[in-house]
Image 1 (cartoon, rainbow, N blue to C red):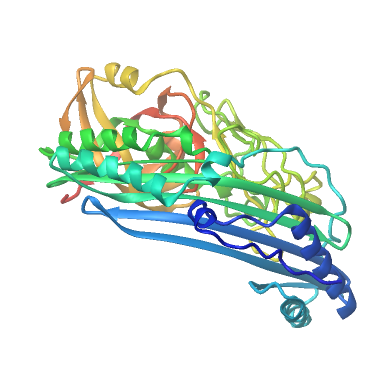
Image 2: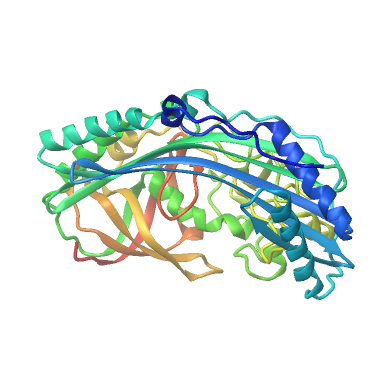
Length: 467
């Protein structure tokens, strides 16, 4: 049995549109070849992961493009099981000799491991709910398309006397998993991201969007938003620290609540590493807070199966402020006498599982309504350099960035100097007054989630910064 990737003749037209991904039959053939080779080496069980990425990136600064790069690669990760021991090895070479070498490396590593009494047999065939996140228009995006969008954004910056910097990235990826018990699953998606910072000395502001569909956001509107905020932020006032009513835009919400995701892992709770220890089933957040993990939500991305190939289930984590459920890998589910939810990481790992498709329930309050209802408060564009201070009370510290604005008598009256905050997420989610519609948000401190803007009272800013 042999595997050789299909040879594709390159052309200037196809190169401009980006690389073509392997076809499903090629993935199947590659996995079948690796499984056959593993069987001949004496592995009792074998699991194969194939990941392919074809990404392109246009980077700009000082109102001009300075870099355009493209990357296309395939990796094969092989996990073997022998005598109650397991290990994994990875290669980016696809010929039979390289696959055999990776299998042998995996077996050698397994031999050096202690027996794992909790190691389960690999799962067999599964049934999956279909998701389609491969958008042809995104896959067909060219360097010229990205350059035109960047040029318009930079032209706006020049017109406004500002300086623009950022990225416009697009690409496609796919993953496949197969094992010696007959399991096989594939997933492919496209992705596009535009991020821009507009600087008007001494101030700057920022906007960013990410989606499977490049037409889900407008780079020019993002540039206009960043430009307007940068201009408004020029004459920032220094305010005394304290507790403020804050209006957190979705990016600011995302980068804070993103630190909660692992607390909902059954392994974290078992190891006493979760803020939910001794709090499950009790009122912890405000009754307007509902959180689910939903890989099938239309604004999400990611596969419908986990690192072991189990189908992902939709799980209600928090209902009306009460933590109700955790997510489980196969191992943690067996230990707890529960059913696995399809949230396990690829084995071997020390983390177990985590919800990777968080969706916060939203409301109907626009940012404008939140501002209009505020006598005195702060509008927060985003946060950065966030670190955990107290894991159990979920106290976080960090700073505001790229646009902090004072709200007085229902309107934005000017900019404020940035603050450092020290704030418990548990307390914050008790103090949410208003929620905006849930949107796909992207930031810099957490992976993308579906979250709303939030109006929160008594948010603690501990000191002003020097910028």
